[in-house]
Length: 184
Image (spheres, rainbow, N blue to C red):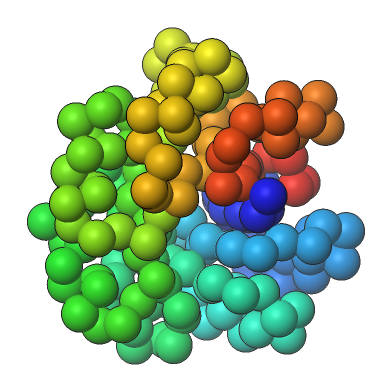
């Protein structure tokens, strides 16, 4: 089961040196397979993204993604992009740039659209309760989705903060789990 780290400015500094130190600390404590730089607030996004990519490469993370900006991901030599659920039209462009591409999905229609677009993986969320993300889907809904869509890599996301959550997900056929707070 893959482990997917997502950053958030609520838990990481936008001071470049402190951000680097915080990220290194997280990566020393957790072996992750995919990492995504997600920051919708900082004015120095590009500088922080460069640091993120450099640090992740030093830790030999297989897929290093930027959130939503596939042009910048390509320009900064990230390996991929995590698109939002409003960016289905960008999948083709990201794939044409040779980027590993993940998109956020919250229902069957979005999953089916992602599959048609030849996406590499999707996140399905929220599984557990998480701030400002609506009603959690729960493990049973995750299992239902996993049984319905067997030909796509589905990553559980949302409210995954404890080892017990990960244990529950590991009992499903999920490709992996993604989290912000679990890795902090």
